Length: 340
Image (cartoon, rainbow, N blue to C red):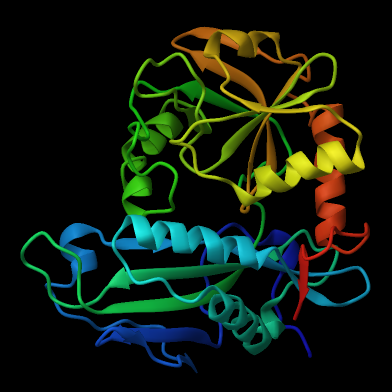
């Protein structure tokens, strides 16, 4: 298929309308079959559950063009499973996981002209989401829901690409213990908007959130999990019931252990130990890995030995191996790559 006339190498991480999107409605206790549509607008009652009580959740994944020209997605089954968890926590009907994966495939096929070519540095970002669409005035779950998937070609999440970023320790909390930090609820991200805007105004790229109960353990940023590399080359990832289970982070743990022969630790990480790490990064679908060069703790700077000029050597190996798997240069574990 002929690609759209887009300046792929200069794309930012933003939205542009593509040709088709998938829509399915839940009514009278069941999901309909769903359709592909050209209509990018949504019409609903002013009293919809999503508008009154933020009853909505979402996912994010990508489609790629591999080195040999195939169009693929990366581990969409895990997105389906994570959305199931989000829906159950928010008292929303679960969209069947097998239909979720098939709908992702349908949307990518229908918009294949927007899948950036191999080597461009761009990808097709896919956004499945669900919301309460029927009227709700008392505090309770909606009766009707809409599940949708759209996609858009994107460039790097952070403008500097793989350039190390500077983050700050945030005084606000991202998620409470036993709250909703472990699911992709829209309300979690709304709560972080004030902090991210303020961080940018203060000259920082992101926020580091600590645990709300004791403020002594590292959790995550507003939209990514942390990874740390010790001086002896061990991958350490923070563990908490309030952290979103990042698919990228889980994949990197496998890459580190199975492909690079590294020791991997998934455990609570005390804030006072990060000064002893050699490298730090943020990982997620949008950025894959963004290296962190410096953390500002209320004026006290923690500078990682990897520096502010480029990604640390171990982080780069992790990045190159995972993206190599995604782009088809390196053989993937079974089930990781779904061909469209």
